Image (spheres, helix red, strand yellow):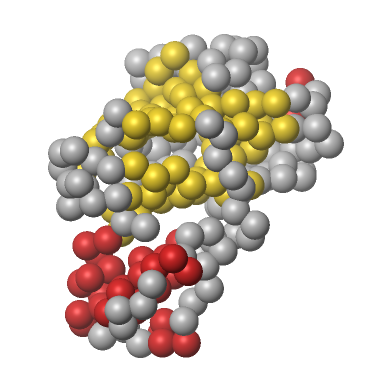
Length: 215
Ligand SMILES: [Ca+2]
């Protein structure tokens, strides 16, 4: 099954805090998801709302790939079995993009293919097992091999979903990043999160700006 793109850039900080405001008001959370807008009371941060927000924002280490590797190169290949802050590399390795192309967030992103399909994995602690979680991420594709479909699979807690992105017409300066979501229900307090390329060759799917929330 392919996921669908969010119509607009979502605001990470607003998701959990908006959830709290609506939940505390006993309103429907059906309004939320991609493109959620902030209620007027969003700026009201009292102690209770801050602690509740912490509970529902799940900590992903290095979620935008901005840290962990010091290099002046525009991109660097990371081999299978190696690590960079928070992430372990698998499959055929990846390219960590430092400045080669436009990122979705910050300046760095990941091409999930070095010369063949690779993956990145992180083990993440969750606070509320059996409660539904949603992974938010941005996806594009390496445009250097010409236009074509780039596919990846997101895996968490034994559940998975496939996503695709077409690089036709995209360039390093206009990557066309799209926002996607993937929901899962953990069965334990520690889950394995994997982004795995399903694309052959040296130009794979690109990802950036990952977060996990309880909605
Ligand atoms: Ca980034």
